[in-house]
Length: 275
Ligand SMILES: O=C(O)CNC(=O)[C@H](CS)NC(=O)CCC(=O)C(=O)O
Image (tube, rainbow, N blue to C red):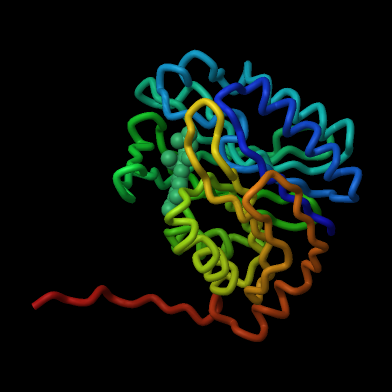
């Protein structure tokens, strides 16, 4: 199965981003990909809650979702929209929601990002994602593209129990679309994603936002990754918009899990007591 990841620099204008991502998905399908994935917040990168409240839409009315659904049906491909920022979260907040779209254009399932990036990385990188976005509380696997996918988003990758739960529920390919900061990307991105692939014996697909984003001026790390269940990097993006591809042999999941049955060998234990 050929997979393609779209690496892009989303602006704060959903129409511009939709135009960009649709031509990139067409190019990926022309290149033979049957599963195509896009980054976190494909439709809008913005630091202004006011701007987001003006340009974002509810799922039912979202033009990026509608455009990508028709494109999936036209091209006959499966598409993971890494996420869309949408109206409709609890407490008047937005949601950060991934969609798995089937080759008939139907929504197979969606996943709301569980772990909110409420972090002060340094003076230029302070985030309170939960102030703008309502978190999800449901882990999601989806049968698609002839296998089972497990969905996650960005900061989720720092919480290994989510990945163990996805793998135990049957996921063989885990998606981790992102808009990573530059300092944490440089230090942690590759090692976190390779660790999640190795410890779950799963392919990891991590399509990333990259570069300096027009509108907000935010900078993201890029370096999209396709990783095998043995932890090998099959394809890697750079600092600029691109499409990266790899041919996955889903049988490698079984061979990696047979060689190191860490999923099967896990044990329950009592918490350490503090005395
Ligand atoms: O705010 C939005 O529009 C969409 N959300 C994001 O871009 C999120 C929250 S700011 N980014 C991350 O989770 C980066 C995680 C990261 O960089 C790390 O874990 O080191």
